[in-house]
Amino acid sequence: MTGKHKEIAEGTNRYRRVVFDFRADRPVLAPDDKAPVDAVLIFDGVFLQRPELARLWDYRVYVDVPFAAAVARAERHDEALFGSAAAVRARYERRYIPGQRLYFDAARPRERADAVVGNDDPSHPTLAFRGAV
Image (cartoon, rainbow, N blue to C red; front, side, top):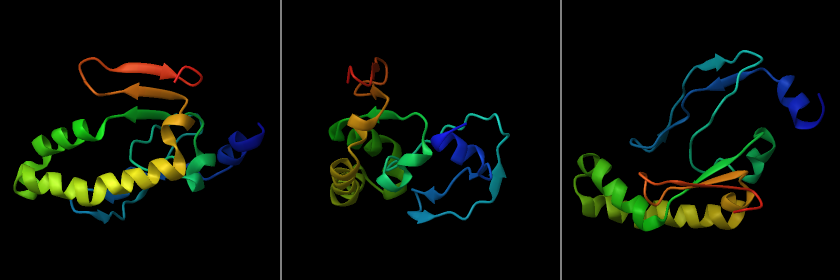
């Protein structure tokens, strides 16, 4: 093995199933798990294509959702958590969307992804691969 595959293969194979509780808005100190040497791990989360993490990923899938669709979905599933759709919308407009814009500018995740899933309409997602994105 060479390059990043060798570096990762010679690592500890340790990972955590969760590192942040978005509902409580705080880090989680979860125990480490150990993956088998031949495991394929799939990581789901925001900001995963930050420059300091770039060397860790063999393949990147970016799920592209317009802000309006993300906010509308959040209003439905987080209304009970935050008390109202207006409170959810305010939280997204004040914190999440500005954070995402900073991330897009710094990491350009859509452009760097190996595949992009267009998820405007979850019942009809699209898929494009690098070079065709």
